[in-house]
Length: 333
Image (cartoon, rainbow, N blue to C red; front, side, top):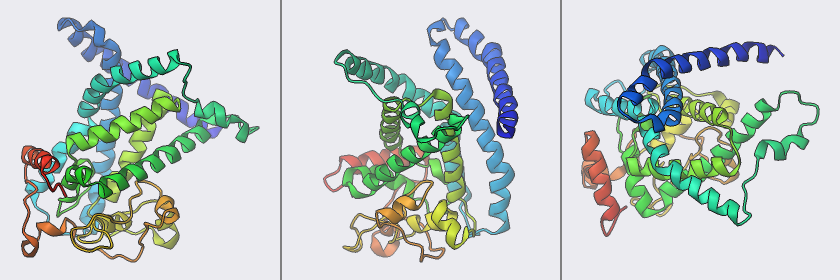
């Protein structure tokens, strides 16, 4: 009851701010451009924009001071950080997601519409699980946890695919090529890599009937944890905490040179460890967890001069272009 009393005003306040922003800025702008047919998409976009601004505020207010308090790397390159900030703004302010929805939304509508014509329907996960929690008055919290687990398990397997398939790794390598990780590094991804992941996430979200409000909250929570796990900070959650939630130390091992991206066959082979995004339980269950690491340097082995000094690009466009070249080459890995 106390949770409901606290959350309802917050939800109402968010809704009011979103409505005000939409009516005062987005709606007049669309009408002036003759794009009134996009009003529904614009309303959703204002919600993502507000969520992104809240995330950026939390990152600057809390994660930033933590990085300055106990940094792992005291010699980060300002240029590299600025590029990562650009990636973060593109994603967290909803610019990339709006583009994905405009491209993928109609395709998913057609796909699920055609499936429904043939009698194939998705499931409503919350309704399907309702008998599992008899007597629970507010099932929204239970459903939210269930959705988090489903999407985190999906993210785990997507992440393993990014590390095990040569051509997918060719794109995902953009993310791992950062030698100086910070709280801005989570969104440093090839845009095609992000598109593939978001399509899979959106497909599953539609298939299990995730309400839009829940989906926004799930994405926001996941992104904040990811920003913290990439932060340049000497932080461990302890023996138990490390096994309950992905920490900066746990995830740094995933980015460690020669550890987080290579397999047992040695240098150049694909594999890795610590793929979980939120909950290390998936790495524990599927035997990909490592808790024995320290605070090793991050990056990819073939970036080192003694292994060829491969160029992954320093600017946004060079990183995107080189990722496509690797994807289309005869030896993408």
